[in-house]
Image (tube, rainbow, N blue to C red):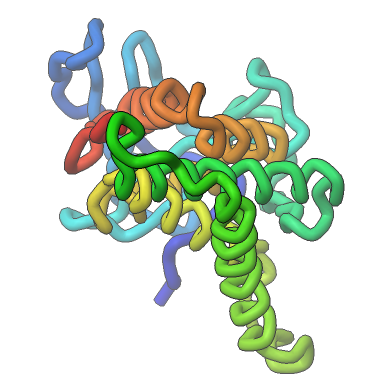
Length: 253
């Protein structure tokens, strides 16, 4: 029995077309029931106009849904948008994942610091009234350091709990996102007032982005002036790609 989720190039052996429904953002969405090599009767909903042809290959993830298997089309790392999901990808290829530790160290440090600064400002705004209470600015750096140390400590705890290399040799070869980065995004979305369910969905969706897109998202969420716009863009992208809204909406600060 095949274990899911799996992310790779999937070759279509047969396809059956389903009904069309209205897309809340305009146009139509159409259901396809696809037999891939290694996974049969997989549900795939696409924005029209679109088609699925037997013999072609599409890169993406097949996972278990509430009603059965479901396919999510994705873009292989390093591929242009025009080539994603086409018929000319090499069969069986998997997406490589670049962990956070391989980012530009200076850029990562600035992202973490900006996030800590934003959280400290939110804390002060929630607990002090500037009209009646002067802000204890002299203590602001202490709280910034505290937030940054808390995030860094969570990452170190995950690293210390990671299995030794020899213990992972029997795992599937498909590379998956590092848990510490996904958890950072999930925790950040919860801080932005999303529910646990919505935060988990949006964190999973964010991990499908390439490295540069995730860095931009993290930067935007960490800046008070751009956090609302960034969160809305992520939510809109989720709705467009997944074909459904999050379970709840972002609550502006």
